Length: 375
Image (cartoon, rainbow, N blue to C red; front, side, top):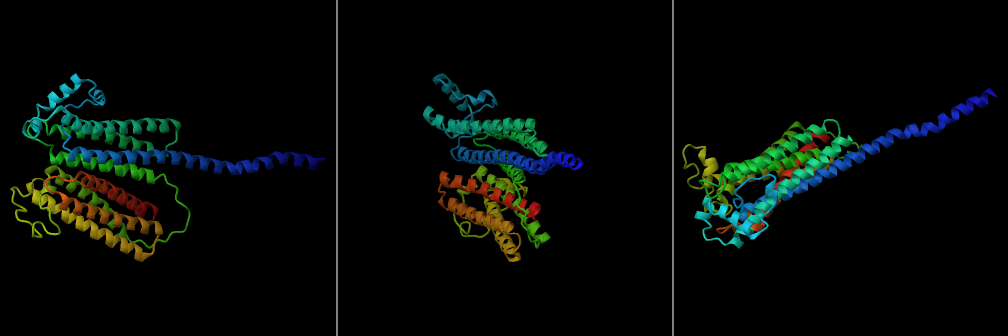
């Protein structure tokens, strides 16, 4: 009788035991599902930011960036809807130096072509803001964000808002005394865009599940430092590339590997003070862009070979090789763009080169994440 009661009391516990064991598994699966949803959202944002960088490049290559002379964060989302609206927008454009000195006599139809590029660039910026803010608020309210992730995402969102203001700060520089925007402000605008892209990619990578396979640990401190140096040099090259674009330095010295027959062109430090050459002397600007490209390429290839020889974690070997391949392809695109530029940068090659820079940056961030956090 006593034994039967003990068995009867034990039976519900026995039935509950498998459920108790399954509870952590269910929670883990639920957490992984939430991480996956957040990661998918972040990768989607990264894709849109990449497209934004491409559209920004197209806006620059088509000389469309000054076609909208006002900054209206909300009302600016509505394009001209009537003939009167178009005439009003065109009248404002005719007041700036670019029209008077470069495009005087432009037709309304030609103005519409450059207007739509700039409007599309700004509209895409607004779309990124909504695509980031609304899901962020939803994930935050649902408690789907890992501990410590919410403030980081909020920081990226604020950086995106700052980027919008920097974009107007850049455009404003070309509305009064210049026929184009300041190359320094262009460099700032592009660099912030790349930093946003890198931050989003880094946070998305942090949500990926890492398998439990045994990994070797033969990486050296020098190899990790090289990965950091590569990421820093790629970002520096973005700044130099923006200076090339902002000064149209790519339309000069259209020979390779020499610059019009010389390894070091004449007039490299012709301006005074010396530091003015870094951002205003087209010979110095293009020379610096070339030299840093060679440095990045040599370091990336050497780093990839170094990782391959260590026979370490295959994921890190692969990401190092992918970075080296991306840098090599980007160098080839840069050379082709330079050689094909005869008075004007071919828009297809120019966009491929700018997009290639973003791909190299993502590869550098991906490799840096793996070598510093997963190894």
